[in-house]
Image 1 (cartoon, rainbow, N blue to C red):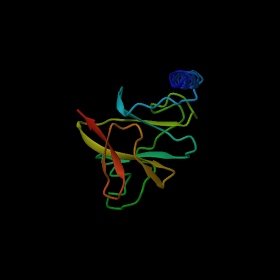
Image 2 (cartoon, rainbow, N blue to C red):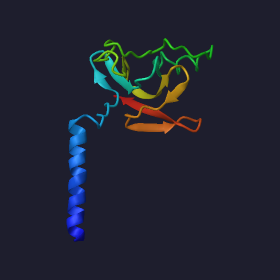
Image 3 (cartoon, rainbow, N blue to C red):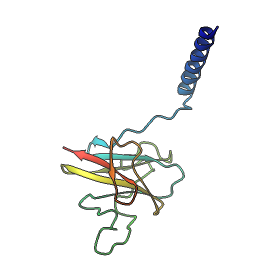
Image 4 (spheres, helix red, strand yellow):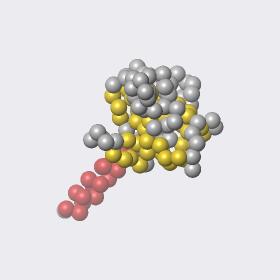
Length: 142
């Protein structure tokens, strides 16, 4: 009796999983930053965001200006797009994209949503301590 119930339960879970995947109830995960023509493609799903910025220890970024002499956040440094340009495939789908040229190195980065919410990349393979009780995403470019 227990075996029949277990088989039924596993069959039911499998059926629900297959239906959910085929009807797109289960979202596909975005890939981590990867090499494309022109540099590395960074993507973040943030459908309710108004502005998304890539911020990191890139030589031309300095954490969106916060690590520069002025120390002020600049939302125009490595601004990401959800308009079908800059590596974005579909306009207004909530997936923000940016192709960034990078030299070999180890880079730490985060995404900044609407100027005040700093988050690690949920698709990154590696993270490291950010020194403030959180995590930075890590990208290693060969």
